[in-house]
Amino acid sequence: MEQFQMIRYLDGNGNLLNFEIPKALSLDFIKELYERLTLVRAFDRKAISLQRQGRLGTYAPFEGQEAAQVGSALALQPNDWLFPTYRDHAASITFGHSLKTILLYWNGRVEGCVPPEGKKIFPPAVPIATQLLHATGAAMAEKRKGTNNAAIVYFGDGATSEGDFHEGLNFASVFKAPVVFFNQNNQYAISVPIEKQMNSETIAQKSVAYSIPGVRLDGNDIFAVYFETKKALERARRGEGPTLIEAVTWRYGAHTTADDPTKYRDQNSSEKRRENGDPIIRLERYMKNEGIWDETWKEEIVSKAGKIIEKAIEEMESFPEPNVDDLFAHVFAEPTWTIKDQRDQYYEFLRGVNQ
Image 1 (cartoon, one colour):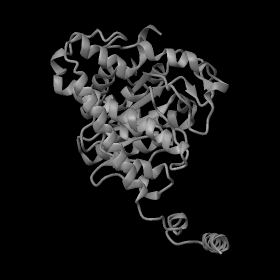
Image 2 (image 1 turned 135 degrees about the horizontal axis):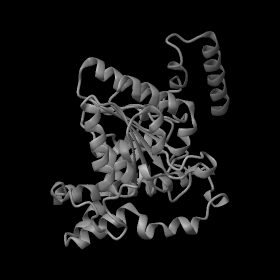
Image 3 (image 1 turned 120 degrees about the vertical axis):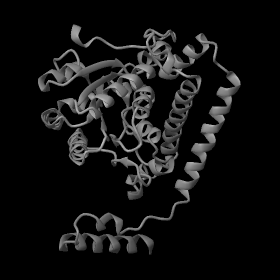
Image 4 (image 1 turned 90 degrees about the vertical axis):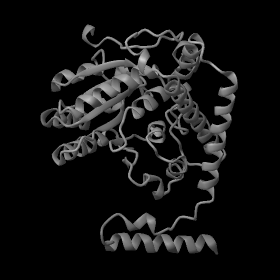
C-alpha cells in the first residue's frame, strides 16, 4: 500500500539514505550497535550448538533478526517494560537480561523467567499473541500511575491472525496506552508463508482499524529500527497512544531446533539474502564506507563475545540441581488434592528410576 511504504535509512551496500540522522550517529553509538549485534549472533549460534550436544533443550533461533531486536530494545529507557516472545532473546539481552538466565530458561528452569532486579522483562510468551494484552495492561497501569514509562511488545506475523492481537490494539487505542506493538515479520509462521495467513498487503495497515499510526520499516536496517522505535516511544510518552511497527525481516534458520525448514522453504534462497539483507554485513559496509572500520577491533569484540558466552554457559551448567517441587509449587496458592496426587506419583516414579 502506498500509505505504508518501506522505511529504510541504510541500504544493503551500507549507504546512508536518511541524511537527517548523521549527528545522532556518533562513533561510540555505531560501535555499540555492532558489538551488540556480534554478541547476540554468537550467542544464538552457540545455543544451537549446545542443543545439538544435548546440553540445552529445544531452542528458538533468531539469526537474521538481530537488528530488529537490538535496535528496538536500545530505544527503551531503563524503567520501561519489555514483553518478549520465545524468540526475542536478543532484545532481552540488549535490555539487560543475563545470558545465564536465558540459557536456564531453555533448560526448562523456572529461574530462567526471573529478570535482573529492577528490570521489567516479562517471561517469554510461548502462547501466540497473549503478551500483547499483558503489555497493554502494563502500559495502562503506568499511565494511571502518572509515570513516563512505556512498554514494547514483540510478536511475529502469525500473531496478527490471533484474536489477542486485535484485542490488545483495540484496548491500547481506546485508552491511549503508552505501548509500542513491535511486529517482526519474518514472513513465516512456522511453515505457513505470510500470503497464506492474510490477504492484506502489509501488517502495518492493520493499524488503520484502530486509528493508530502504522509504520513499516526494513527490520534488517538497525538505524531505521532504532530511530523509528524511538519516535514511537516518544509519542507514547507524550500521551499520544500506541504505534504498530512492522519490521520486515528474515530468519535464516529453523523455527526451532525441532523444525526442518527445508520441508517448506528453499534454504539456498534464504542464504542468498545474506548478501544484501544481513543486518551485520550491512552495518559493517556502512562503517567501511565511512572509514571507521577496524579489523583488529572486530577481532577483539568477537573474542570478548566468546568469553562472555562461555562464562554464561559455565554459570548455567554449574547451577544447583532443580527442585522437583518446582513443577508443582506454583500452580495454585495452595496445592489441590490433584496436584498433591501428581507430585506423589512423580516421586514414586523417581524412586523407581533411581533403584
